[in-house]
Length: 247
Image 1 (cartoon, rainbow, N blue to C red):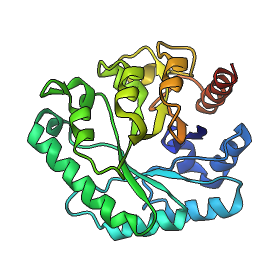
Image 2 (image 1 turned 45 degrees about the vertical axis):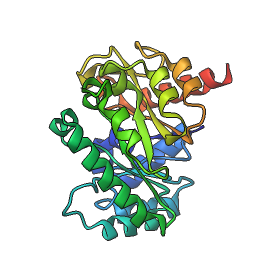
Image 3 (image 1 turned 90 degrees about the horizontal axis):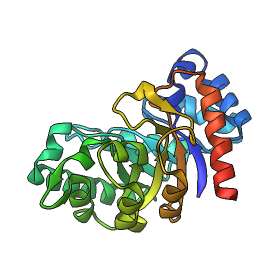
Image 4 (image 1 turned 90 degrees about the vertical axis):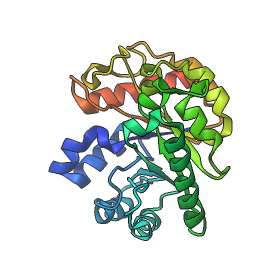
């Protein structure tokens, strides 16, 4: 597993100084980062990739809407060097309806077929509702996964999965090799993003999670919010992550 950072964590800094923020991430030790709003930031990301020793192998971009210009999304992904194109969320209410979950999986499969010619794999990133919602004797996310084409990946947000009531290591074991990316964060397991903490200082079972996610390509550090200095929190998380893996 290689380590990355979700750039949404430093969204305020990016808004003030995009290249300077990328430089700070590189200085913290990151050689990979995961952009959000890929289409919006296409030009800035292309320039950053040329200027700094950093790659963007995965990215978040909404593309499951029926009115999405998916070719525009794919063009941005190709320009930025993205291999894993991840839709970051879907309407919470649809995850309580098995028919809508299956329809969403079918749409993601269609996007996967369109992306394959560009060498891009598409996937989905969960929040807590996909695990909290139980359909046909399992979580909505597991139902969704069973409907997906083998080329579709999942990016499991391990923290939000735990908030949704999942046993995260067991979930990762169930989903298997479909999980190619994991979001790694910590906190008190409440739904309050401001309660999130650097890795190793909250309630998440990091070591067991990493063991269960051993087949994933990227572990992505993320804070949805943080009461402290964001760069310090990210740096502390990376240091702890590396020490956990080394142990």
